[in-house]
Image 1 (tube, rainbow, N blue to C red):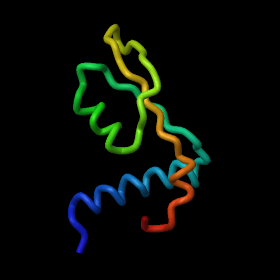
Image 2 (tube, rainbow, N blue to C red):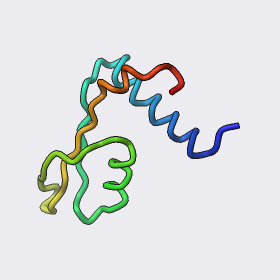
Image 3 (cartoon, one colour):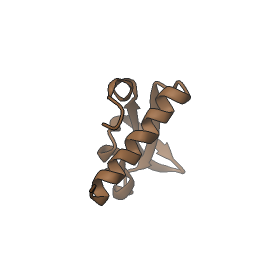
Image 4 (cartoon, rainbow, N blue to C red):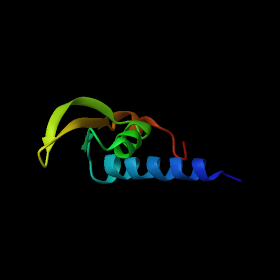
Amino acid sequence: MRTDGERAALKRVGGLVLAADSYGLRTLRAAATVDNAGSRAVLLCTGFLPVGETVLDGRPAIRYERDLAAVRQQPAGA
């Protein structure tokens, strides 16, 4: 029986595989304001890497990218 954390991880991977395979996406991009620690933590936990700075609604923010090439190479159910 899988734990809640394992089920959540599989759901995230499933979404990334869908983005990579079904939609042909190679990279996902996101941004979060510097004062939004929760969003920044989620982005890091899901494999996004910081790639630069930007401004969102006049507030300093960090830009992130997630390379989907590795997702395509994972075996099904990994």
